[in-house]
Image (cartoon, rainbow, N blue to C red; front, side, top):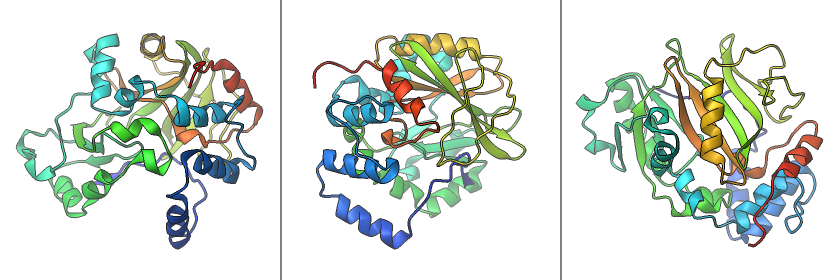
Length: 302
């Protein structure tokens, strides 16, 4: 058993004690103040939330003011499966083996291993269960209980998560050549593809690369992340199918990131992300933040 790798991301971390104090101090802050101060700490400047121009600023605006009723559906990993199936068909949906809040209720004899377990109401958390012993170890570690207490609407003020009921889901492990699959993340603005992030394993470690719609390399990276790869990476054979599906999934959404798992058989939609990195990711060069912001037409009204 093990937490799936966070794929090379090595963001600076404060000591555990300082983090606890910071969380206690930030908890009572109004959402706008919290988002502004955290943005300042990471970007070195306050965001212009009232007149956002940068992609990162527009994500703060979205968190604070965009109450699109579709967002809670997309952020709910269970409900999102129905949305994906309705638009591009069930072949793009990873089957659900079980969902609920109490792992003691799981009939493990019905679970096909290897499998993954993750929270439906949170992002970035997944554990691989190779066999029944891994499942028993996962339960003994009480990880599920910690996951069920997570609320991203409080942690990063991501509004849509606030109405997603906490629960867990178990899925078959999607593999490629017996290993964890690459993630292919398509950034879509009103059905138009801006760029692609490929998150893949190379020489035993996880790396990422930015590509344009034509798969040409982009001279962009996240200065806070490890694993950036600027060399030659061939596109997945299913890139055309992923692009077509992403257009249909995003055509009436001003911005969404469509994440695919690239397996041996076919691509699956892993999730639809409306708040990537909670809007706190940095880009090098910084002009890419402005360029992406220029592609995004926010709703006129709050």
